[in-house]
Image 1 (cartoon, rainbow, N blue to C red):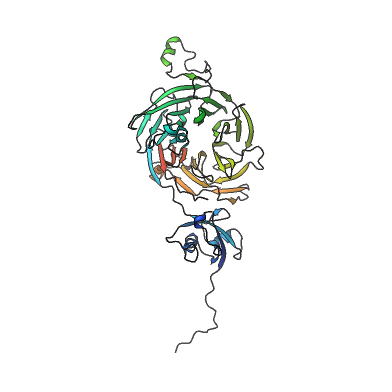
Image 2 (image 1 turned 30 degrees about the horizontal axis):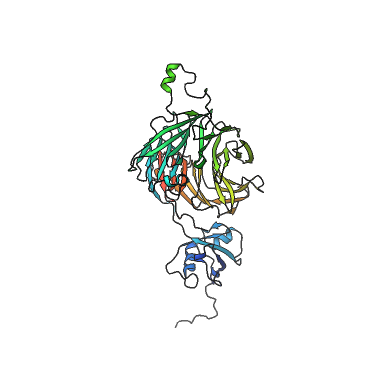
Length: 489
């Protein structure tokens, strides 16, 4: 005869529970008042929390919405129980969890192959700055990619991966390091031949072919030019060179000063040789040539809202604010490492600068002279130098970086944690997504113990129409999806 169960015997232990307070900044998925707090199992993870939120007693969604969750600015990638243990918190603590719509990864879309390394890229579209500057002169459907290569050529591509135009005549005599669209019909470039060049870009009526014609050659740099930025409405160009100099130029040949005769090619040649190397484009000098840095100037850019202000970054560890009206340095931010790249961010009505370093991280700094702290946060995750940066086109809290480790990383500045002692304190953010080079996935990049060898990323742009466009040592321009990667606030 079976012995009846002792009713006094204790049953299985109750699963541990944690009180969660749900919040969101998206009004369309706001929980009704009175439903924001809930006891959930301590071992619950993102998928389980997402199911809870979609349930009839919470949001009561007609079709499930996948969610991601942030606690104290960091995305939840473990169970709540593991989060509590990792942060030394009691299970009796009420956890505030911010929920946002889950995001679409930056899936690969296409690659355009070159004959040599691709040093820089820019994009033209209705939403890109050159398209906006062009106004009515931008033709719908005229989306283009501009690439600069170590073979000394510029190329303009359409969205089918066809080269529409190449700078084969009157171009650079050495590798091109930087190129930008000034408008739908004008391009600026610069390179190791120490010149800045302005080009007129025209296309046929059917948009299937085009020409790049040199219209201006600008001389005054004594060493190779590493970086370039443009401001279409004023026709101004900024350049940064490896001797620490920063040049300001105009695209107007009538208002540009004369170039120094000693810097023009063939200045010391005899008359017959001069005739052979005479350029078809006018040759001019700078509006100003500044020397703000004591080592190579690796990046330069116009302030997005004030074209009389510029920022430059250098291997001398500094970011400098330049007054282009007076050609004076207005502010200096000193960092701990050589700086290789720079981009401007607008965060909570404040201007921030992100600078890529040789130490594999990105420093986010406040350039205001009266800022309480110049370093706002550090972005960590790359395994090699960070050589290029671009801000997101449709929000003020994300950016993409390209590194010599062969990846691009996407960052969400809302996701922040306290740095460890080994990291030097302060605030740290880690990347949300990693975009690898397709050539590395296919095994085409060289095998090496050095991260990114054979697949270094040299240039990156993020555009609402094109997505994330990157270029590098693998001789490819690579396009990845760029929309809906990060949830709106």
